[in-house]
Length: 167
Length: 167
Image 1: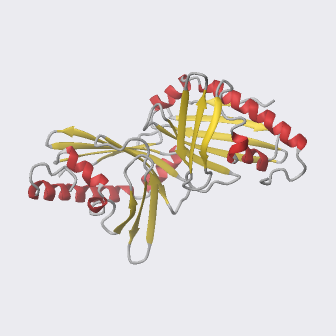
Image 2 (image 1 turned 180 degrees about the vertical axis):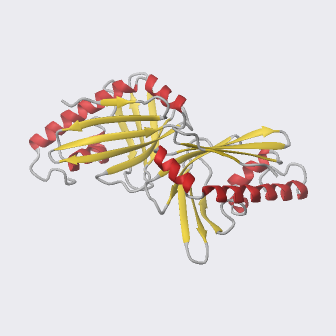
């Protein structure tokens, strides 16, 4: 299983996350763009993931909710620019803190049978970036990427060649 | 006439702009939220400003075009979070470089008869911020703020008390 590298360099309002997956780029990209796949892996294991809208195209909107027995946490944003197998870009806003927005790009780097995912998030201030780091985001990212890893293993084992194409 | 302070600090992907206007906050805010006023001041003098859509509310869209005899330059984005007399927040994308997005907040700070406008823009990288600084943005900002200054002077002279309310 791959290792997740999370960096939050001092003095700049960035969080960078990298992880390599043992699956071709088209399939990894599908796990980010198809809500039926996305809801199987994104976020902490302790929540149920409900995707209300997920429109990965320029100007498209997204909204999802993480639920447990007691609470519901909503998140939403807007996709910006071309959304391709190489790169997605979206705004990200936790509904518990309206008006605190980050801008997040995901690059999918083709390495043949493997894909490197590079996430770059920029915050409105270094303080806002630090607050995100201190929020316990790491657990959610690791849970999510571990589940994505397992999902990729299932799909590359069970699907015929050309599995990256939309079904 | 007020002076515009533009700062682009080394090592962080920010551009900060401040200017004080001799008008009450409600009126300055109206000049940002009402497209009929906005088109009279925003951007370089050398272009004609055409506002296609301007929806300053959470999730609302905006798009405008700067035109001269030869060319047209489109810009668009989405408002994020509560849009109030204290603060607006939007994404900003030049259509000549799709997928290169910045996140821009404007704060309106009430100083009685005067208003301090504070613009904070954050870019996806320091390189993208530097490219914006080198693009000649300063001319557009100074032209715009000088025209906003003149517009505020006209409206505070000719309008009765309570001029900040929508007409």
